[in-house]
Image (cartoon, rainbow, N blue to C red; front, side, top):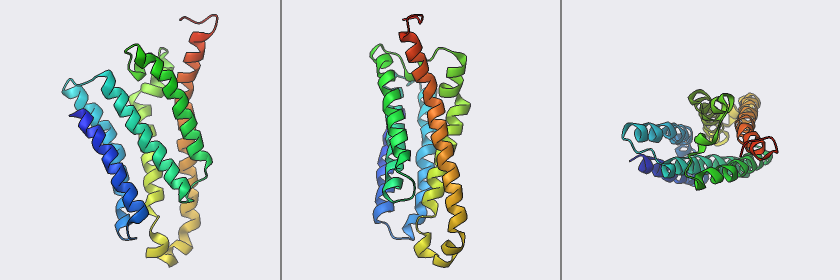
Length: 203
């Protein structure tokens, strides 16, 4: 059941992309709530897995993979539409590939992604429910905020002409905050991996 919820998030992402690229301005008013729903259900699949005793290495890996797909696809799409700078998807893709490559080592030994973290600080920053939730909220807010205003130049051109500067300023702050959290949450994974490989580190 949990894996089906995860799969449904991927399907909903495809629906969202169709609306973004091919939907009428009126239909695009669904962009923001649909984006929030896609990200919010990330917590649902984990909750269902715990309640039904369906926690597996595959499920955890599948969940992270879909998270990464949703995240990276949205950053690329927003950059393609000219709504954010291209540096944003580059940062997220590079960080994601680096962290996932490190995590694949643990997966090969049957370890879930978050089980590879050893220090309490790393557990809090990367695996802690607060940080994971906060990061998800910031990303959801960023994607939803930018997508919310996508049809407004056509739907309400006078409003957009008056308020676009402020709206874009908020968008920039949200994007930079998301990027900072992305780097902060990736650093402990990289640092612990490097420490384990150092001459004084434990193998």
